[in-house]
Length: 294
Picture 1 (cartoon, rainbow, N blue to C red):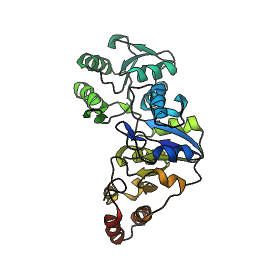
Picture 2 (tube, rainbow, N blue to C red):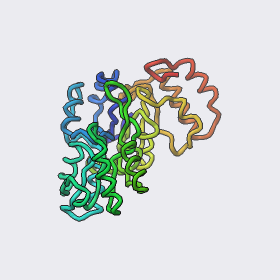
Picture 3 (cartoon, helix red, strand yellow):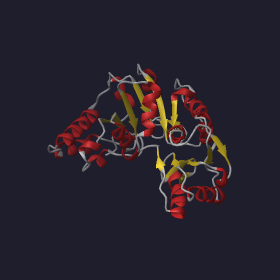
Picture 4 (cartoon, one colour):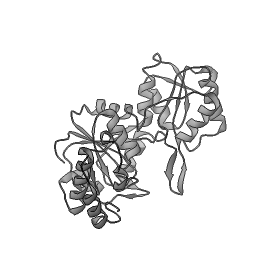
């Protein structure tokens, strides 16, 4: 997959799963001859913390190569309020850092706030959500980093930022502006930072990573090492399809096998509206756990 001048790479399900690197991912990414930006909906951690984690897997990465939904949210909020505006931060350190970097001031109370910014934090509690609700109910701008309903943890799946946002919406009847995947602003921020002319979005989820690429008008690669499966492509609107689908990141270096060829044929057929039943039967035979997972 040559010709791309920057890769916008998702993390969980693409680079790592749990505490282990996804097979082939590190070598494939390090070998690709273009800049890589690692784009995450996680708003709780700072870019430096994310970069340190990725470097631990062997990736060549610095803090400026990490784009978080917190950064996207703060950058968007800065366009809605004056410089130095007071912002109620409902979230973690990653969100606070992003607010400060965009020339805004974090405050603790609803009564002092000119705007509200909300992102995931494992320490959020009722008092935090209540304070956010009091502020939002006043009609001030409210930006949420993302609305993922769940988040993977070492112990399993836990409530994500979407559940906390829903609590504030339930209390106020107000919906926030959302800037993380599957919405375009986080990809637009990555595009501005990289100044890329032809970036490629890489992700493992059709409903977030690929949807964000489509919203931003960017090419995308769905890798089947995480959440989504090739069967989910069936019945999708052709405009929502990824540019390519592959079993893993070896495809970046031109690797091909029977599964890769079949996946290419499937996407081509679905995009053109031709009969793909023969390709589907072929994929069911050749795909296996750890690759296309038929």
